[in-house]
Length: 221
Image 1 (cartoon, rainbow, N blue to C red):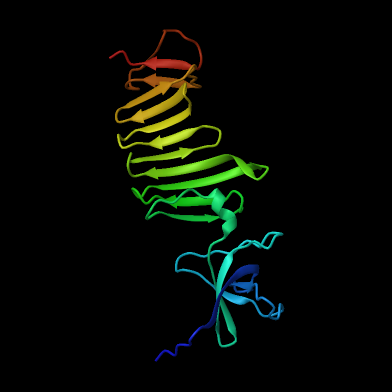
Image 2: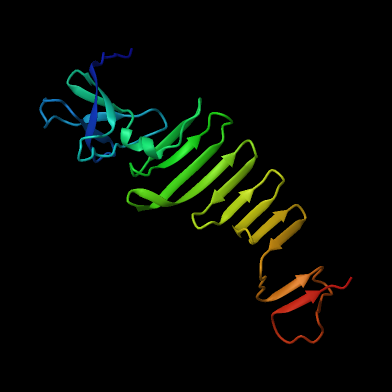
């Protein structure tokens, strides 16, 4: 038989300092509104399959909300929303969700869109005055059936529903690998070493007598 205890003293407060014990468990100190500030840290709980640790409050006392309760003399806490992250998060559709963390001013987030279930990962960095100037993105689009990875410098890798892999540096430099065909668009195509066209068996140097590498070998059959 399992004995259950009734949790009491429920309250919504601001999470203060957190610490990790020798066993890896995170304890959290809530804003206790006049109670003994030297009280033992509360045991922090999470939804199954997800764990987080709140950022410390800022100088104005703004921090992550925390729902606290007691089981006898033992304190328990559950983290809620943190208003400092709101401006850096994407707008949610009905049915959507977002996981976020990192810097409060420019968080990294993983968005599930409510409209079609597409997923996007956004990783900002290189902050200037608290605003990110660069970011990495990875998107799984269920509408276009494409997977796209974008570097902040502009390079992209895209896997399409047409079974193509598109590698692009800019509008004038890209490589498309499709079923039975590879297409390159660039100002200069450089091959170091030997390039063989056709069946390697019987391939000859073109033009005949070209000394040393690089060489172009062509099977005339």
